[in-house]
Amino acid sequence: MKKINRFLQILLSLILLTSCRTSTNNETPTINSEVNLKENINSEKKRQEIKFSCGEDGISEYLKDGWVILKEESQEKICTWKSVPATKNCDMEKDKGCKITKPDKIGEEKIYLLEKEL
Image 1 (tube, rainbow, N blue to C red):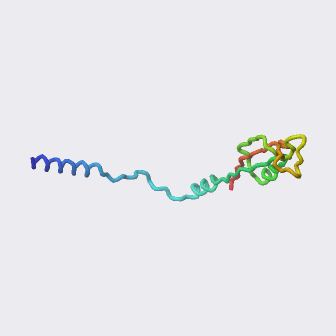
Image 2 (cartoon, rainbow, N blue to C red):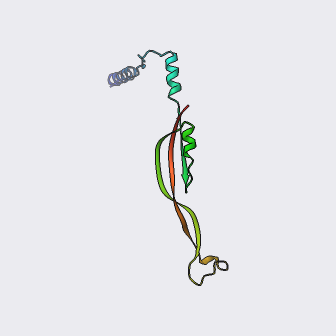
Image 3 (cartoon, helix red, strand yellow):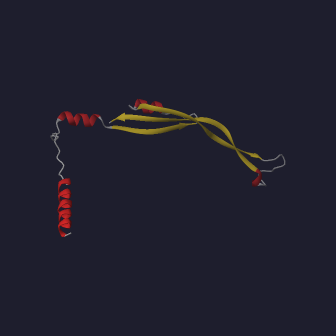
């Protein structure tokens, strides 16, 4: 029995020792040359998302500044709200509980995803 336990301990130790290998990196290290630095500088880009709604339009300022439109979306948006009486006999100044707020003007919201190289 002692021989079997000793054999199992040695076998377990060998398995653990052989499974722990050091990793070797066969790649050669790159030296920062001017070409690599220029590629890194050119690859830096800045992105931002801007929104214009209800007739606003300021995208031309961004385009003049060197921004490029990557994506453009539009969706409906409520621009203004109005209060109306809930019933014909409702006095909105005296009874605030009979006042209903409804959308007045519905416009369009444009969402732009812009990118600019630094």
